Image (cartoon, rainbow, N blue to C red):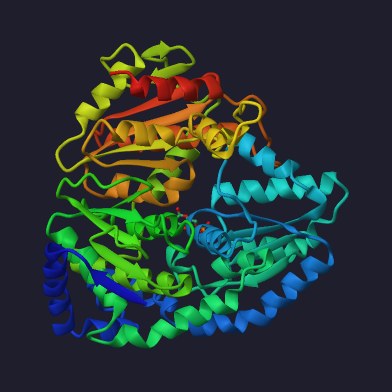
Amino acid sequence: MEVTYREEGVASAASSAAGRLVADGVPARLAGGDPTLWGEDAEAEAAVRLGWLTLPRSSRELLPVLGGLAERARAAGLTNVVLAGMGGSSLAAEVICATADVPLTVLDTTDPGQVRRALADRPHETIVVVAGKSGSTVETDGLLRIYEGLFAGAGIDPATRIVIVTDPGSPLEKRAIDAGYELVLAQPDVGGRYSALSAYGLVPSALAGADVGRLLDEAADVLPLLSRDSGNPGLDLGAALGGAALAGRDKLVLEDQLSATNGLPDWIEQLVAESTGKQGRGILPVVGADPNETGDELVVAIETDLGDVRVDGPLGAQFLVWEYATAVAGLLLDIDPFDQPNVAESKENTAALLALPDLPTGAPAFVDGPVEVYGSATAKDLPGLFAELLHAIPAGGYLSIMAYLDRLAAFDAPVPEGADFEQMTDAWMMADPATLRALLALRTDRPVTFGWGPRFLHSTGQYHKGGPQNGVFLQITGVVDEDVAVPDRPYTLGRLQLAQALGDLGALETRGRPAVRLHLTDRAAGVARLLAAAQEA
Ligand SMILES: O=P(O)(O)OC[C@H]1O[C@H](O)[C@H](O)[C@@H](O)[C@@H]1O
């Protein structure tokens, strides 16, 4: 595992930060699990959140359990592995499986279309891992109820198909015991976003066929380096992240195009955004974007020379080193890297909205073809609105696009007959709401981020509300053609999804941030209109 500085400014910011850390004995103290590092206010939380430092060894105890679980699933012909879980309870497994090239369907959504897609996919060969540390996350609860209903309706005993991963004492543990589900308890002294090498990352990955023993070996190999004052990749990376942020380079552009890991930036995004984005400070991860070279960016490249900092190493080591680096960056920024004080706000707004008979969507400010525009805007059409939003981004700020849509819908786009791969990719790209990010990024030198709702609420959502208040927010929601009921709950997925969007919008508006909601009254035509409008001057 190696961290290399490739730019002089970063090297000097990092070495002065590292010098201060070493003078305080931080490497050895952190590696030894000293909870006093982040100050008095953070001590109680840190005391029960540093277990990730020992996971490369302690998680080995899980290997026989996981081997048995995977073996039984294989013997029963359960080859379709679905993971229902949000944020830290699904992001690591997604990267592990993508990197190992084994199929895993991750459901971290409330989009009815995306969930219906998963429900229709080989129900007789499906095993579902339901993962949640708190055991009370609303999306995870809903997806568990929906899968219980699916299995019961198909005459399948849910107890043969559902595996629960949770912390001891959580409501999910009780449900697993009551219903007789397979239960794997996770080590509780590890926070959600630091749990890649715990049962949360390992159970679904092992079921899907990834070599999780190797992942732990990769992390164990780097462990002895983390107490060192030099030649310590965690210290080197953390000093670069924190040192650069203190020097004004607080946008972290993550580059992984040529790396052997697949999708690691999505996991890093949650780790860094939730850990650092608070008290008006923080580091904004920017994923899937080209750098703008505007002076407030730090480009970190995984296994390529494309960045200011280069990080090389296998996935297991990357997990541990990024966790350590994030804890170090938190120290430099003088924040508690283990809490997420502003995530609850949107959740509470959503719960309050769901209690109302009708969701208060209000009336659109204007309508542009298949797109209704909600919020205060002086523009009268979408090209004008985009220009207005881009203009509203303050110095040092960013635009965030948040799409509460089916992230797989673009693959339904019609492709011309006999199309080659490039033509197919073009058709998908022009049906993908994420393309809006790239199109708007061409028109500003400020970072443009993109997140799928509600997934990002458990990740960059903390930064949006707790970090520097210089974001401009563009939400996209869509009409629901066929909704999905949530058994024994007074809402459908479609209603929950819209309430989540409105709840977060409310939290952003309270902070006085520019925020609009674009509602697609026809999803495919709406995306096409957004992309066309983004290209109109
Ligand atoms: O694992 P769960 O308890 O369901 O939590 C899932 C996610 O929920 C919250 O949004 C936290 O901010 C995240 O850090 C966490 O990963």
